[in-house]
Structures are given as structure tokens and as C-alpha cells.
Length: 457
Image (cartoon, rainbow, N blue to C red; front, side):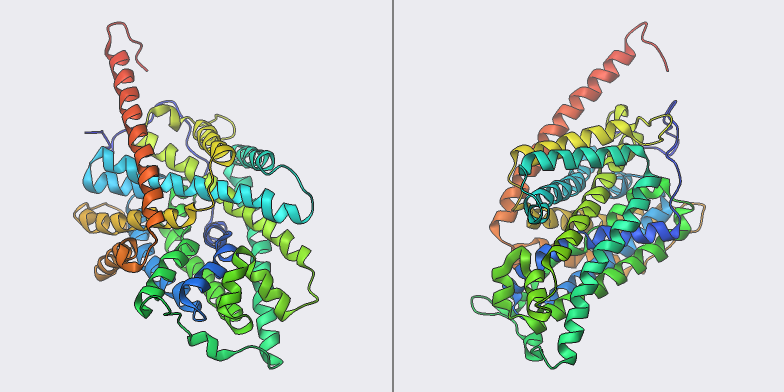
């Protein structure tokens, strides 16, 4: 079994730089959740549930909020990078399961960042200048890698600015809705319409919720930044929970505005331009270019945070000796995990260059729901593991209910499309191959270090 004991120490590597206080962490959580999800998902959610599209976003928030309690207790007990993979490893001690959980989380971050890179070139930048999407996407990923390498201080400060910009876009939509309603526009009856044309109301709501859940993910990324926070045990509960409440409130208000002003069928037909459709109806004279510019900053922020998370995840797993130690290398002056940054950036460039990632949103949500179910169960298992310091403790019923709801949204009973399972199967098969390669590399390194005359470090 992989050695993950508390006494394991990483040799001759500097620690990550602790620069994040409660305010920066709050902006990190809000910026990661908001991201590009609500900009792209409003129309798709309306297509599944109808005019009551605020309900799936609210239910997705409830499930995510309960899971956040599990993350808060675990990050309080183990305030280190690696997040869900670390908790899985400590709870079950099965290296293969730990690796696959880490792979699923890493895939979610890199895929989201790659999707943002493509959206940056193909959608938002295209409103101003036409350039080859692939080349723009690659340049986008390289720029993110340079910001990531420069330092987490610069990265999270950039996140504050970008989060304020992307929030302004959603506040514009909410303001347009308020103005339209005050002027007697809008149709309140649409807010309770549930599309049951070819399904039951339960399937319609749960199917839309499983999709809307993708817009609520991101809060879990913050636990991978624990080693770069001041006093993470103290500041995480307030920052994470308030960040989720802020994001969910904005989501519900945006979805209510959208439904009031535009019929669900038209929102669904507009697809990723659904919010632009709302803007055209509620404020016909508002320049679309301004909203496109805000969209540019939104995808930059989403991608930056996801790449930060993915690189810190690999760094944390190297410290836990789940991955080869090379991924734990920290640059001596920048104090950033440079090998992990390069590795995750190369994967993102490959996705941007060769893979059609337009259908991976639902699959990413599926994988993360599985991970969240495992984390909720891991919390119950790790209750027997006591630590000396005080930390947040979740009511026992919360992780139990959260695990049940996550597993339901994963199952076909929720109305999840078969394509999500097919793509997830392909991704997990790739993860299995990487697990075998990782095992062979570790055995080779172990064999080399045990030979007579091998240098000890």
C-alpha cells in the first residue's frame, strides 16, 4: 500500500507561499463557482425543465452546499493540498481509488479550462477579431501557465479583478430584469412552468438539476489551495459557505430574470447566447460588445482558477506519495509547483488542439458528483481519525443526505443522457492506463534507489 503516513516528509523542497487571507479566499470561491457556467448553461437548463429554470439551480445549490460541509470538516482536519484525493486516500487506503478520484478531479479542472480556452477564441474574442481558434486557445493556455508560475499571489489578485468584472455581467442581467418588471414587462406565470412533454416532472427537474450542478461546482477547488492560505482551519468555513450563498443567489436571480423575459423554448434555442437573448429583450439598446467583453474576462477567470487547482492537486498527491515525487517540485524563487504547472498545461494544450470538448460539460458534472459522493462517505469513515487541533464539524445527517442525493443525480433515474456515461467511460479508461504507467514508473524508481551504490538524498 502507498505510504501516506503523517510522518512522511518531502525532502529539500521549499513550502508553498501562504498569501491568501479570508477576502482573497472568498473571491477565489465566488470566482471559481461563477465562472462561465451560468453564461452557457441557462439555455440548456431551460430546455430540460421549462420556465421554472430557477428551481434546478436552487436544488443544485442545496446538494453542493451539503457537500461543502464535508469538505470543510476534512480541510479543517487535514489542511493540505490534494483535496478529495487526499481524503479518499486517508479514508480507504486504496491507491487505485485515490488515483482515479484525483484523475477525475484533474480532468474536471483541465477540461473546464480547455473549454474556456476554446470559448475565448471561438465565441467572445470572435465578436471583435477573427483568429484561428486552436492557435488562440494554445496561446491562452500558455498565458495562464505563465501567470500560474509567476506566483499564487499574482494569480489570486488577478482573480479578484476578473471576478468583479464577471459579476458585473450577471448584475447587468439582473438589473435589466428588475427594470423590465418595474415597467410592467415579463410573464410571472412562466416561473412555475415545468416541461413534462416527454417525461415526468421528477425526471424533468432532476435532469435539469444534474446539468445545473455543473454551474455550482468550483467550491471544492479551493481546498487544494489550503497550503497557500493563512490559517486555513479558521478562514475556510466562512469563506466557502458565504461564497456559495453569493453565487447561488446570483444564479437564482439570473434564472428568474431570464424566465420572466424570454420563453423557455427561445432560451433553449439560443443555447450559449441565452443571456444575450435576455439582454436583447429587456434592454434592446444595450451594446452586445460590452457583454461579450465581460464574457472574455469570465472565461479567463474560470480557466485560471481551474489550472491553479489542477496543478496544486498534482503537487499535493506527490507529497502524499500517490504520484512520483517530481510533481512535488517547487521553484525556489517563485515558490510554485512548476513541474505540475507544466504537466497540466501540456494536457490542456492537447485538449485544445485535438479533442472536441463541446460535450464534456455533463460528463464533468457526472464525474464530480461521483467524487462528491465518495468525499461524503470518506468523511463518515474518517470520524474515527482524531486530530489534536479544533476544526469545523458537520452534522452527521448532512454528509449522509448529500451522498444519497449525489448518487441519485449520477444514476440513470435522474434522466442523465447516455452520452455522459459513454464519455465518462472513455475518460476513466484513460485514467486506468495512466495508473498502470504511474505504477511502472514508481516501481522503476524504487528499484533504482534500492540498487547497491544508489545515492541517498
